[in-house]
Amino acid sequence: MRRMGIGLQMYTLRDETAQDFRGTLRKVAELGYEGVEFAGYGDIPAEEMKTLLQELGLQAIGSHVGLHLLREDLQKEIDYLKTIGAKYMMCPYVSPEDRSSAEDWMSLFAYLEEVGTEARKQGLIFGYHNHDFEFEDKVGDAYVFDAMYEATSPEAVQVEMDVCWVQFAGEDPLAYIPKYAGRLPLLHLKDFSKDEQGNMKTLELSKGTVNLPGVIQAASDAGTQWLIVEQDVCQNPPLQSVENSLNWLKNNYLNQF
Figure 1 (spheres, helix red, strand yellow):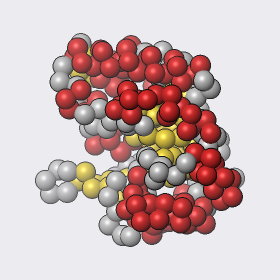
Figure 2 (cartoon, one colour):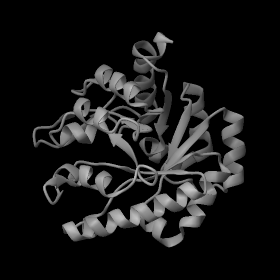
Figure 3 (cartoon, rainbow, N blue to C red):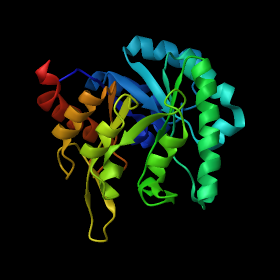
Figure 4 (tube, rainbow, N blue to C red):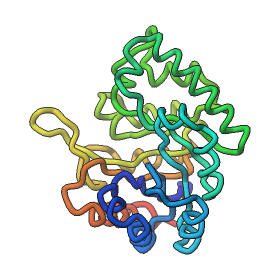
């Protein structure tokens, strides 16, 4: 198996960063995470963030940048990521009002191609992070997830697959990962179960129903660069949860290298 980087999606620690962004990053580094994927920067200027990450030995993997931010000032988002040494810019979500029809989706695909083309010109890699609705909505006969990558070029739009949402939607991550081999640099490594109402309950790694060893092997085979731990809602204090998930990875993946 090929060695992939281990990162953390900082959205998991949103309550902590709201209180002390710098201190939370310090704790993430102390736990042993190699990189972080941002979801906001806590109003920290890019040069200061760059210095802090270098001091902590954390790699800036990239950031989730909402559609509204891409539309408002794409150059501002690109500049921040380039300054902190990040490589990836990911669109994390499409709100319901932006995806009410197949026509909406086709218009969005064209826009994502534009954004990704510009990002690539400036040395970044752009991509899209899925939830479950991309496996419910369709464009023609194809799921939106597949239609999106059919309608866009790999040069402009890469895949950030969230295996939790793929499985929750009723699809098999072990079938979908190889389908996008070579176009899947980032993978959200998550675990979950369903509550009595059938809603997703995100869990620490190995506590749920995702075949994590299979996912990790498939990601390695597909050329994935970073496994990014994320837990939408934590049952334990979030820092404890991300430590427990990292410990599982240390014992079941990192110990092979």
